[in-house]
Amino acid sequence: MTDSIFSKIIRGEISSHKVYEDDFVIAILDIAPLSEGHTLVIPKEPAETIDQLSDDHAAAVGRVLPRIARAIMKVTGATAYNLLQNNGQDAGQVVPHVHFHIIPRFPDRNEAIEGAPDKENGPGLRVTWKPGTLTPEEALELGKHIKRLL
Ligand code: 5GP
Image (cartoon, rainbow, N blue to C red; front, side):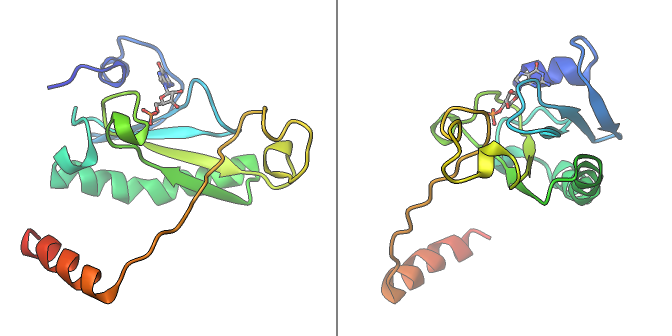
């Protein structure tokens, strides 16, 4: 099993700004925030990616995510937020221990204003999304194989 920096934080060997803890989950402020209130919600189980996470830890994360998001929204005054969850290096995951980013969004700050001079250079989350296509035949075929495993 992995012993990542998050395992060390969970065990208290490395300090963090912890905002929540229960038997299954901790939430800490991200050390390099994309926006004010950027928080990481981390199951204590040392699974690298979410497909490796036990049902109990997955359920525990799901139970507290809305509550933590509500608190962050209230404290920061964010008007929106993204939940980001990277699985594997090819998806941009750096720390190999499951974690959910809660990234508050502020349309009145430069990071979200079109044409602001530092929009491209300042901190913030920028999502680019180029949709592809899916034919009914492809959907049927793919769906059939996925359903068989669930
Ligand atoms: P990933 O790319 O793996 O989804 O994101 C890892 C996140 O963990 C990054 O946003 C990074 O800033 C954060 N991070 C890495 N090391 C530490 C640390 O020691 N303490 C805290 N609080 N956050 C960390």
